[in-house]
Image (cartoon, rainbow, N blue to C red; front, top):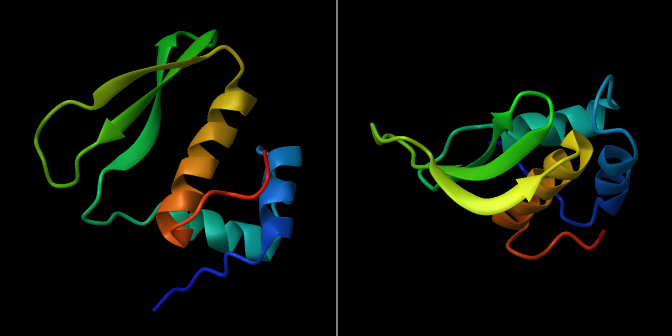
Length: 100
């Protein structure tokens, strides 16, 4: 079974500083873990204006329903990815990501 060590704050710092491109093996492992489907709602981003605006959405697992769109909108993809990372961190760790 895959595990997550919430003490690995260095991985959050690494992702925040470089959300795109090649990651360290440990960060890639964490990102893969964050992307594994589960039985809880899954946070995702919807591009609501091509390459200009992204909106946070919740996808219900196993449901044949459209994503539930939130009112959280981003104008920089880096900010949007960081927000989703923090939400997925919280889902795995059971506590907030210690990095803002």
